[in-house]
Length: 398
Ligand code: C5P
Image (cartoon, rainbow, N blue to C red; front, top):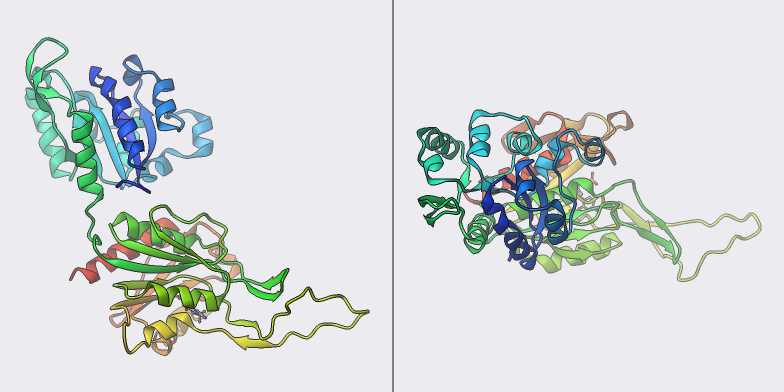
């Protein structure tokens, strides 16, 4: 149910932290990955060793841990997850969040994240009912923060009333409710990614420098919004995202076959860098050196997958998106390409070597549609992907 999902689990310092190991076990049992973060107080109630052993991952505790910064900066850490869960959410953590404080790792992540946040509050009943906490609760709800609990009942401190942390099963249900429902739930989307390899003979091939990074992020962003994603990828440098229907291919022809087999879909995003040509008759055995005589390769044109799917008379996806990697006159060339191929949108980018975009982590794109050209600022490939996925969701749910 939660396969392919990642939870950034922030553990606050309260007695209810004793329920967190059980929560981690339930999350793992449903296939979720858990990145644990503990406040200094949390370590008084549950040990980092227990948490990391159950999560199967390193526990992050300190904002100024330089090893962590070298591995993963706190901003990046705040963005790795599909959902941030704070359990137990103490009065102190809620106040820090409501006030926008960032004095330790947990509060910094909560201030920096662009991911939905779910709080499972736990505190003494008087602390919960205190007007300050209730003010913070109202402010956080207004900011779009999600809540589960607290429950009514006997408390560890001997008092009775609201303030007990929701049981792990109840927190699980809140997580499922949130992650199972995105604007693209029930929609099928196809994404192509990576380069293609066109064989010359059994050991040699023609390829290109595409890493597959942008297509992978697009697929990941669509999964995050609830889509069922078929991910057709050539031999990419980056691993495929979790939670997709994975179709690995090598050549353009295989990619076209896999794309056609994935239809019908509600939207298709063609981010692969498909080789334009293949060797017309690839040799079945390794071509040998022949005393200075050079082999002559004859080329044949590969199918244009984007164009053929865009121009299907039967079963054309309602939304077809292409990418255009250009080195000059980006907008003019991409606009012409959109017309020629017959797709709905083109995301055009400048891949001249000085931009560092090809194989890099950032992208600067212009979205070309029938409404004209919309230039997006230079941003990480993940952010480009999330913006594109949000736009796809908006269009498909109109
Ligand atoms: O023609 P060009 O390669 O610049 O077009 C780029 C767009 O077309 C990308 O979306 C790419 O995935 C798609 N394409 C394709 N099949 C090809 C060539 C390009 O799907 N043979």
